[in-house]
Amino acid sequence: MGAETFRSAKEFIERHDARIIVAAVPPAVMEVLKEVPDVKSQLPMAPTVEAARASLNILNEHVDHDDHHAVGKKKKSVAVTGQVMVILSGSRRDPYLLDVAADFALSAGAAIVLMFPILVPRELPLQSPLAEEEANASRTIMEAESKCADMGIHFHKEISRARDLGSAIDEGVKDNPVAAVFVGLSADPEMQQSDLQLVKSVLSKVSEPVYFIRGKKL
Image: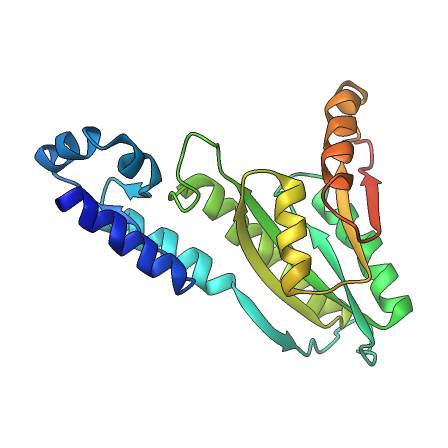
């Protein structure tokens, strides 16, 4: 009965577009949950209340659908007529990817949607806390935000959670209609095969124009 209560609470909160994380579950309760596998596999869990709170706070801090008027330190802000989406990954290719997208946005008078998709392994519930990935997302978004402000570009910022990049982009553009999406690829020749698979996966799910930008070789 307790496990069914967890399930009901989870379904109720999801219907209201919120998150629930079960924290510091006592061993006796874990034993009960193991007897109801579909409940345990769907419940995001954190080892401590502090870890759960950190996960919720990181995501909430960067979910932002209000337009930011970026006061340019290097360039004057221009009138916004549309927006483009930049998919950040926390990798070394992000700065160059953002440079290319920023040039495009400035020339088109567009805003930028800074999107960092946290890709959650399928064996975990989608809302599971992932401390390292969430910290990386928060840090990357803040760096991109600062760069956009320096260039005088209007921007939105959002951290999402998805199983794969194509699905993350598809869901993102539903909430943030864009004229184009910018995705970074590796400059490493050894990554060409995996990059090709990434391109096919994204294009199979995203109907908007997608620009794949190969990073600069170091």
